[in-house]
Image 1: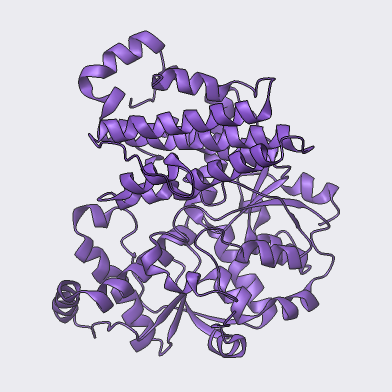
Image 2: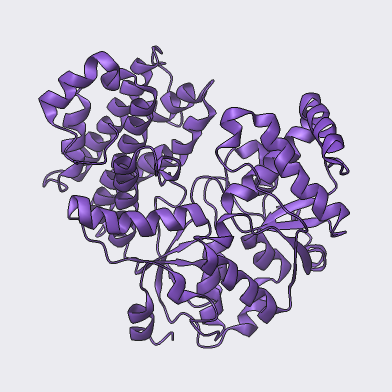
Length: 149
Length: 317
């Protein structure tokens, strides 16, 4: 599982050239890994189950148990699954590039939402003991002055 | 498919409603208030402000005591019923709308909130609200069901001339799901997964709605004060996604989302050197303009996001 900063860098980059299905699979993997970071931070064992063919949707449902606020990213996860299907079912479509870009942005939203919650709850890579390492290593807090990170 | 929404019944019922504008529409969201009142008047829908209304509890009170938040929202409902004599409350703010709905749910499903509401109401000297006395609706329900698309079409003058719009509903219009059961009742109703009432109304007004993947995504509104950088990133992603979808305008129906999008659009430029050009306009303002109301009448100049040059270039104003 890649570190959060690496995931962020990949999601900030433009959609790469290559096979649309492979790129869509990469973005789905980034979404999956972001969700796995959350489950690990909450000390939850990821279920092997899939929902509508996606681990992401099953893990989202798992994460919502006992934390209804996590439902706020339900549709974001579903949009990721939807865009994955759009691209992989019709990779030759003229809008494939735009669809991949939208999938990247929706995945980024999931990443931002989850890391925001992790920072808020000071868990995972954002727990007190990890924070200094993370800041030194990746210099994520590029903003100055008024950040409360 | 069963049609559970009796359109004529809603039209009759929503013709005159108690208007709960809440705190935001008296302050940062004054253009939303102004445009809501303006289109109501233009369409012949009567708004009567809830008498002696109070804060719904917003997002803060529930963190201290959710029962007090239920009481605060129930007092608004009680006033609408007992002081205004009306049985429908219209709340244009997603936060207020959600909190009144939540209070309704708590009072109809649990005993403890009922006891707390009865106790505080007695102390405050007013009649306690009882579940089922008042129906809470959003401004979208009010226009869509209380006036109707067919009638609205007749009122459009000039229209939005193919303005490309991303409809942004925010996270509280559909969540938590259990307090909005009517959004899952099928034909005629809105949707938990893909809300569409704003899309429907603006399409009637002549807008071209773009397919917007983040229409119910979090804008980071609750973190605007505690972690502004994260809110800026979330908003920037929404703005960039809207532009990537081809939108010239993001239509809003929540004052918190609207303010967040406007403020962080500026902040994203200042802090992250990321410029976005998409304009942010309340759906009530867009409807008003489509019906021929002046920009001043719908408070366009009151928005931070300056949309007048775009609206002029499209021939809308």
